[in-house]
Length: 304
Image (cartoon, rainbow, N blue to C red):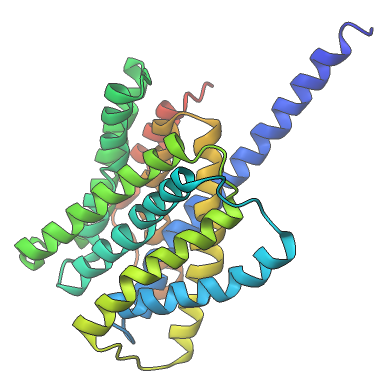
């Protein structure tokens, strides 16, 4: 009996960890997908850099008392500090600044979602080449299916006439930043305390975005309850909790498996748009949801 108990405990621990990871994954997908609608609402009252400046200012005010009460560990040296700041600029300031600015320049939500949904494919290639991750044929098929499914989901929203060179460049910057930031955080910030890291990343993101908001947009804001609620949602549920959930999952699993979750976020946006605004999904969207879910299942190695 004494010999078998550790194995049983290990199995139970793995089972508990698996359930927690599943909850974190679904939380991330739902909140990140909902963020499309929250951001769209907020930018009706403030231009993108100004909106993000408000978002990270409020984020710092939320994190400051939490950090003071919980006393997390801080970077042990200059190198770790720089790594945390670089990851934060990529994940927060550059990624969101690029995607928000692309929509501000006229790119439709459908085109933006489609371009950013290529992140898992890009991550798979980079992780395969540089990080030694190996995907089998079924997982590569899953990545391609996921991308094809997202194309079907957002196809009815795509308006290529709204795409300009400037908006396309902004979306490309966003895609590059979120891919690089996710891999960078995993490679160089493995032991960082997520509480202090989030605080530092919000501070450096605000330091970059606030001058851009002042110079380019004059920090003009039309205060309203929808703006306040969108900022509250995006700061607490998305920037703090969802991003930390993503980092926890990245530390525990393969980069491609985790980032394949991004394929599911446009689906959440479509379903919420249907429930909240009565925009009925097309047959292409419904087919795309099924194809995308199959792709994510293949990448994640789900067996029936």
